[in-house]
Amino acid sequence: MQLYSAAEMVAADRYAIDTLGIPGAVLMENAGRACAQLIEEHYADYFPGPVVVVAGRGNNGGDGYVIARILVDHGWQITTLMLAEPEKISGDAALMLQILRNCTGQIDVVNDEELLRHRFDELQPQLIVDALFGTGLESEVRGLPAVAIALMNDTAAPVIAVDLPSGIDASNGRICGCAVRAALTVSFDHPKIGHLSTPGALHVGKLEVVDIGIPGTRRPTDLLPQAWMIDISAARAFLSERPAFAHKGTFGHLLVVAGSTGKTGAAALAGDAALRSGCGLVTVGVPASVHGILEAKLTEAMTIPLADQDGLLTLAAAGRVAAMAASSQALGLGPGLGQSDELRQLVRQMVTTLNLPMVIDADGLNLLAGQLDCLLERQGGSLILTPHPGEMARLTGMSVAAIEADRFNTARDFARRHQVVLLLKGARTIVAAPDGRVHINTSGNSGLSSGGSGDVLTGLIGGLLAQGTDPFVAASLAAWWHGRAAEQIAADRGAVGMTASDLIHQLPRVYQELAQP
Image 1: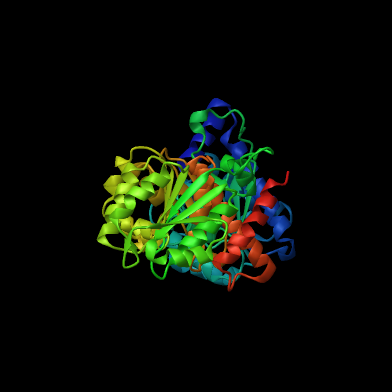
Image 2: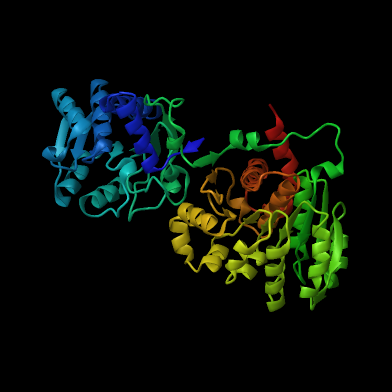
């Protein structure tokens, strides 16, 4: 499903109003009616209230006036707290305010903090409708609106957010100082990026998307968004057909370069996961001194010893890696490699000279830190980087807090600047393409927060690359597949104690689910 930014949603509204001739008041009426209907469906047990509608001065407040009017007409006890002077409300919102007044709706103009706190204490609402800001907010929330958000969050009453919880930037999910924690969010026309991207996604509650009458099939292509939500439908569409008359060579050969003393498990996990992706052949190259250990761990995947010193790969391994890469369709690099100056040089050489699609994770990313110029020196083949926030901090020099505050733009900007596919791990994994397209993954749970799960993801992405899958699609499909495996395991026996090996064994079951018509 497409995800809109604030600007893209404004453009769609203007297209409907200015080009198609649909009055803005009609769209506002449709939005308010749909929201009121969902409130009555989800919260029938709360009838007749009292309900408080907290309305701002813009169109989001106008939606709130429509909701208040309809609920009043249906017998609910509604009080609208208007955080703006009436003369400052204009356009369609002013029209809806006047209609609410004509219908004898209870409207209180609240222009100071003391009065606002008093009215909340006095009304003791059982439900609250948040119609403060919606999608247009970009600046920090201060003053009376910040107090209103705090009061909404402090009450025990469920909060229904109109289009977007107030305080969230619709275009990236950033919290603008403070934000409403909604139990239900009713989004108009399409979900917004802020609904799906953390930290904003954590404030949305249950998300419902309603049609408000903007035709979808007639929108010009230049108005279409560049972000999408990855759910089971999208993941299913990413699957490639597997020919009935095929052999192991049909499905590609992945080379994995990984491992060091004490970290052969990472190499083994990546190799096994690649095979579970449907890849035909997998070869795992590790330091020669730990090769025997890997031979004991792996059965189906092939292994090769590479030149090392004290359990870490050296530059002398480059020749054999290049020879193996020449007969492979993709390369997975990084799990358990360790750290050394020679490894930094080796990773740089592999990135700049090997002409095949490549996925880099874990120690491979740490070895890239400080030498990102090599990303633009590649001779050919797409590159996928898969950092968690800590690794992203080392790559960019940003703090983890700054990365987590705006995951969407952090990932998209990095992908554009360095011309890579960037998969930023975490709750609601972000996958960004070099051309600005972004996917937000919806699968996964806390069971993925254990050692080795990232190595599984690396192998899964690498296996898909080896089969010829487009790199942006491979990263996005693997993110959903990986997260869905965790969901299936948790449904069967819980998320606590989930291991990376559990994920590997679950991968074919997820494929089976995806492959079903």
